[in-house]
Length: 293
Image (tube, rainbow, N blue to C red; front, side, top):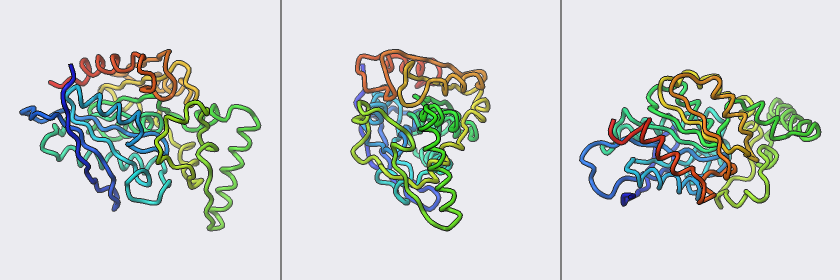
């Protein structure tokens, strides 16, 4: 049985910018501050993506307070559009955590992060450096930007092209010039999956964003999440982010971590209504991040 929920738009300060957010709460007063989950979106997307709305509404229907945000430069948030280096997204996640912990409806000591893809990598990294994060869910996330990018540009030709793009970006940056690149040149996504992206997805990015993703290593801090709960859930046959990324993070994780590889889904975990993702998430939350501590 699911609970009725309400939602309201909010604004969150982050490094001099305002982030757009949506806060989901139970329609009935729970009588006590609620554990909460912050939902972090994928690369160049927004909180309005169907897959993120589904995720947030699912958590809220189970009784959690849920905050969806747009990273800076994305959706309705402030900042230069498309300028979303990974460490800036980490700062946004931490500032969203600070804001959410101050809300009277929320138990500030029990806030989890849940991210998909890019958002999953950001969630893991954020939890690794900020012990205010009570639990983490990474859905198709990644831990090593270099090995991820190498696998996504698998042929020698594709990798040489990607590497040349980064080198050209560095050359232009040294000359004080800017350079933008296509989202498909950074993260290839098969045609049949592209309909899962929101209508307001960003299609061009500063080349520095691509470099930041190559340099980003959530796997270096994943072990520091222990003993807090960590769920690494990945499609067994992910056609965007190889599942080896979650497997390698699991090898570096310690107590409290769990890895699930699922058939029947691809990179967008809520796109298949018949998958077990919802029931598995519900069971994991009941055990490791229950409504009642």
